[in-house]
Length: 139
Image (cartoon, rainbow, N blue to C red; front, side, top):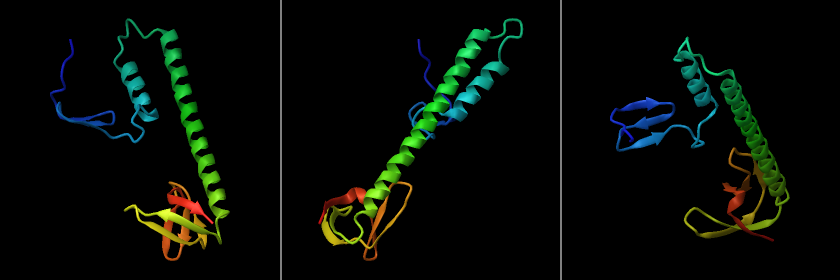
């Protein structure tokens, strides 16, 4: 039997009522901070006469180490992808490119420079910064 949520508030990155729950964590999954909060809550509220099995604790710590390793790997992969995007965009300097704007209109112009951004390289064309992912054609 499941019990519906009946209160309002914030619990480990999720807020809302029984009708609407919104996650506050960007990744959409349990992060490092949430994992530590749950682990500390478990240790704080355990029965002193029946402490948590040490094998279970080691298993949880190993899982935490795996999660942390995967997070580091994701960051490194993202950085590598951004670096490759920037390098490929630098090769477009001086070339004429065709791109789509946010409304789907086609534009064309010469790439004057490239700027880094957290989401990828931005091509400087005239007075505009165009995301490299919008480029449809390079001449």
